[in-house]
Length: 85
Image (cartoon, rainbow, N blue to C red):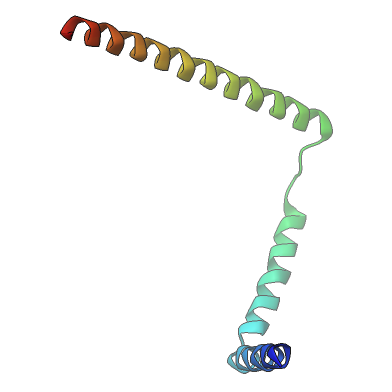
């Protein structure tokens, strides 16, 4: 019974979208998007590998910087805490 209700609701939603022209607009949007993607220049494997290495190195550098900054702040705060005690 629940599946019949779900199918009826989906059919009503589909009908409303169809009558409002939403589905036609979506189809047009999809077609235009496909045409634009065909105009794009996609990187080759060598460029993709190089870019991936750059991203990994940058991520590693940021991680090391964050870890070292956190450690320095922790040491400073522990030092200040020990002075207050």
